[in-house]
Image 1: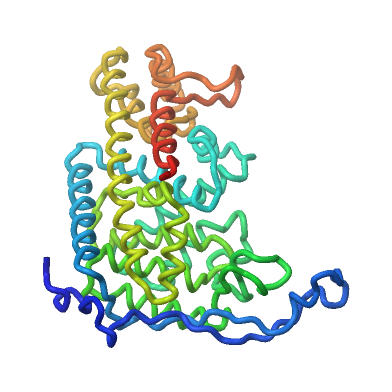
Image 2 (image 1 turned 60 degrees about the vertical axis):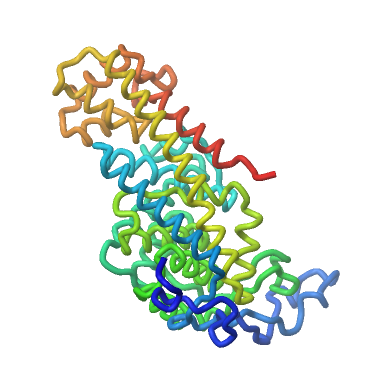
Length: 410
């Protein structure tokens, strides 16, 4: 491991290099319901409140104990090792896409947005109707947008991630910094008594510019830098909604831009799901100037996330190996290419198959029928028009992944 001064870290306990804490400022409050709201409790929702003032971190040097720095090194090595496994698997696109979907679902679950892999897959096909599934599909798109930032990250990239995420559920605010006060917990009537009151909206553009300057630095270990940037983003809370999901997409974008994860997407959110209470406590500690908890939380999440991802990939590989014995087709047949497709898109219709395999609708249906005969696919429902098929073994593997990720630490 490089000495602290060579990697942008200050020596632990160096008072001059302590991470800057968020401050507070008094802000006047005029209740929107002052003229017509209930009299009961009115006094609790009047008068000034204290909003956070963002710390300036562009050139700050974090201070971490040696043990925490060792954890950063170990977790970074685990990510690099897993990335190499995916690169050498022969199925880079398939497994990257599969992990993208599972990570988007886990990140959404942290925000209490849950849906089954089947419902999410149906929503991806355009079968709308379940709000949570639709929002998770939007998160898949936002994650994909984040991973396209292969050169550098700037405020426009962050705004685009949010636009993709929220364009359906909150079109008026998608891709725009917030223009109002937001807070976490407490009452919807006012910020008084809230668990956390974010900075006033006028401070958001400057705070985000400062954050992107921090992200652009190349003198910090990537994983620790990404964890700190994520915590700073969540504390700024630059959007009226979707901050958690956008912030975790930004974390993955940083790992991709820095080339720590070149192809694989490590489902860190799935690791954080094991104890979301500690994750939120670490974000609270960060605002007070304590960087170690959030760095530890992100690094510790890597190990169960990678282990879970390896099991998911193994389950899908095993299923594909069984299918190879069941499918009766030539080596170059569309049916075998369709078997590869459903490893990551476990719910399909004839239109999707034709588009993805670049074959005619007639040949797409022939390939589907072959996989139905081989018991790889089964039709959902009994309809004869607008039919949809699922790969039960892949869906079961994704459900098992979600169950493992959701297992709470006692």
